[in-house]
Length: 141
Image (cartoon, rainbow, N blue to C red; front, side, top):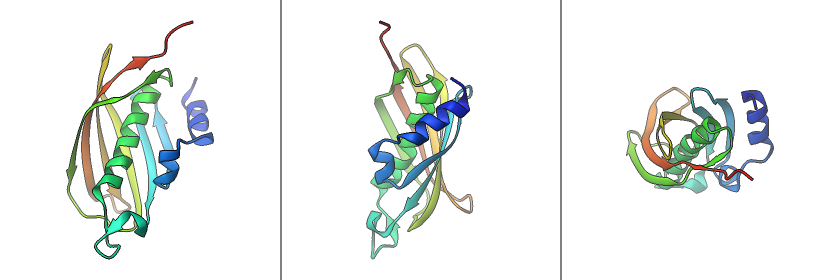
């Protein structure tokens, strides 16, 4: 399946988590193992009188981009449960638009290494993350 077909498929039926996070997939590159999402942070995601997005929402956004980078790298034929996840928060972010990019750094037989960033509309780095995943390939019939 080519990237345009993969992108159409992923857009047609996004997981509930993506909908809950007000996200939409905007770009993939299966050969490189990259995926970009756009998310809208709403006041309901925020604390401090609605000014600062709670870190778990930001983590979910960047983790979504990383997981989908791995899924497209595997051409949708894999599940990618997280074995380890590290998050670094660089800036506070309030309501607004953010962009998450996930990248496959190393793709092995059973383990993959990912990284990802979450940036605001001005390109300011909000979150950087790394993840180790288990690559679970579909069983052949």
